[in-house]
Length: 170
Image (tube, rainbow, N blue to C red; front, side):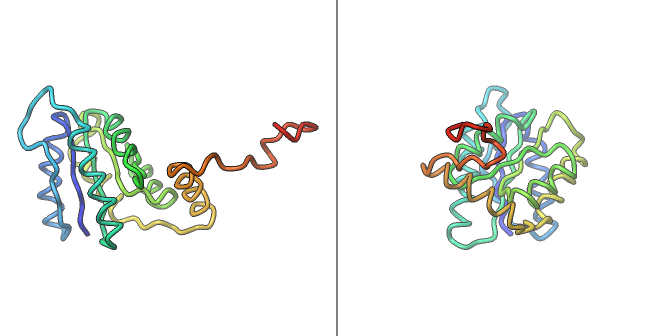
């Protein structure tokens, strides 16, 4: 499996560690930078490239996921999610990493380099990469609703449970 990596200065240490860890565990890391510590670098520069590469690979039929890393992981997740076709999830535990794949078929995981130990973050990525999408109908349906919205198809229809009794327009 190919794994695209992108970070900022706060995630540089983990990104560099992950590149070696991935290789040692049979993955093909693709590092989109940064390659030197620059305390004022901008995470979108690197995270958008990593996210685009994941979508490009998946469109070409390749087994590919992504990892974006920053201080908290929040901005990196937001950046990755701007790429059409990306479902990036912020992982702060093994459970959130697992559920990102099982329920959301996330193709990019974001982690906060300043919030966890190197071992913890490596484990979150390991769990994310090893967990398959469940394929359950409800999850497939929800992902399809997001994809439709993302490509300009509009909001999903409201379910009956969201309607105000006596007013079919609400």
